[in-house]
Image 1 (cartoon, rainbow, N blue to C red):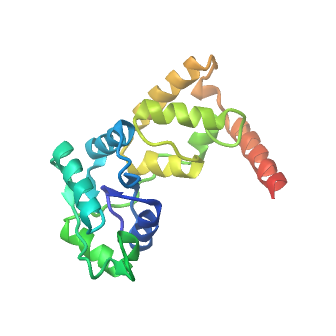
Image 2: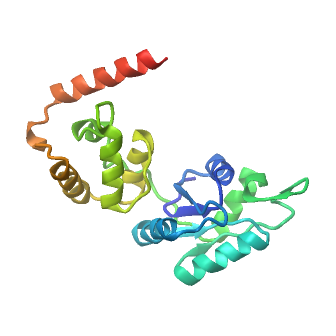
Length: 210
């Protein structure tokens, strides 16, 4: 079950529970730690592909849901009852079964979609976003240009595809990143041989790290 919208939850354990139930991107509020940066990421995700708010069925979760709903009135809402989200004395999304989470998302009228493959690992290698010196710094800069949260190479690739980012948006943002870093780059000149060389270097680094 693949979902178009980004699921907004409170913490990392909630993300794990959601991903065990459906194929979807998630953003976390870090509990009460809602700050301007997190709110901006959630708002930008809402504009790109929509969001579904799935917070804990307790006082704190309801407060976070209310704050997000006031800020993003077009957000969809998925709800869990306290019984389904309780284990011992703990109440939270992470305690719900995959079946319960899927049902809650279906009731929120989540948009089902086909997996999108606009971008591949070749794009990351071609722009120095993986397996080369400075890759992390480029990913951080790119995330800032596109208004998405930072992630490792695998996470970045998933977000590029799942957040509906276009090829033109990506190339324009990367050109800015290269320019700001003083890097000369011409996509037409970045041949498959160069990409293969970068992959081999990444493989060697991974092997050395084991």
